Image: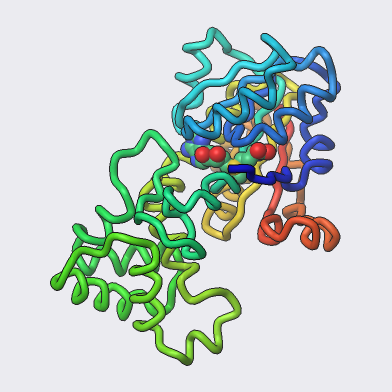
Length: 308
Ligand SMILES: C[S@@+](CC[C@H](N)C(=O)[O-])C[C@H]1O[C@@H](n2cnc3c(N)ncnc32)[C@H](O)[C@@H]1O
């Protein structure tokens, strides 16, 4: 299947990562290799390590980056184990780190992977390197846990009502497909929600399940901390997130690393413990013309930092 992929906030990513400096750049979410290719093109002195948990994405990235030969190395791993993954490659210091979080267009647009309610497919949603599928969660966890998943990861106002409808429906027969789940969510929310919500009523439930299946939030803070530890002085880090839960983690983690330890007597930060300078006071958003060209960029927020 041909999937058109346009890297999000590409010019801004290059501006903050400054790859013309050369050195080892790690793309923690190499996906289809769009950002990675631009980093490699920026300077012949860039060495790229592309990480992704998705084997299929890595195969596409390998094709795209083949022309760069040994300057591009790809590895299947979860960026939650960044330090260990890079140590396995003998890398202990890096010039830049990028994480472009969330799902790729390849994942979203492959019906068989079950990420999208726009196509009917099995309720899977695994990006790779995880066992539990969305169908396992929907059919096996308690009604209360489902409610918590929908509320905490989807910020879904009707979490309880939807969890109850699922618990009732699965007593009759297991819920196996994206279409069945979407129909249940739409019915549980009722025609008013269908009219009033600006996004599709199933959006939040699908987002919540995806986050739970892939444990997307759990290791993000640690990954950023490890990336900062690996950065050389002057090294840069860029994280692009697509929903408020992720952006909140990125924002507070960067703020804490920039602040360092606070002296209890003076109330001032100890400068020797301040690891980074945050380069983006507010998150950088795509321009209107980027959103027109690539609607997937609509919710993107980029934050960047420099290692002190
Ligand atoms: C938005 S796409 C990246 C697109 C990429 N920047 C490009 O230009 O083609 C996000 C990718 O991150 C991967 N991913 C998400 N969470 C991950 C994790 N914890 N570890 C490794 N890869 C992850 C997904 O499998 C997906 O391929």
